[in-house]
Length: 78
Image 1 (tube, helix red, strand yellow):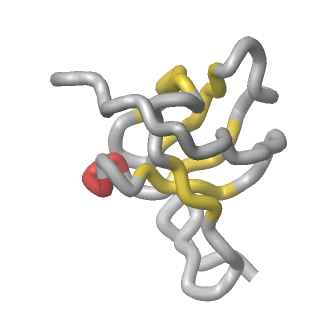
Image 2 (cartoon, rainbow, N blue to C red):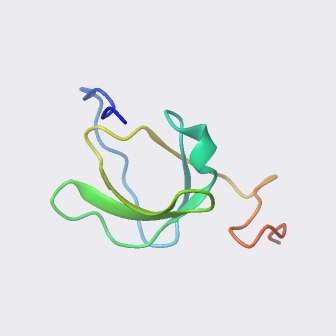
């Protein structure tokens, strides 16, 4: 697997519990931020890929809203 190309866009501001998805790797499914970004890296628990530590400078993460989001357990959240 090749690393995603570095972007010049500012890294997203994330906090523990934020719901995200990788726009570069949609097959990973939705995920939740498990650790506060530290040193430009963040740990995300993805439904299909499991826990991954990603560089915020390379990863293309999109914050998910409440509408239509399916939790990591596969059940709709309220």
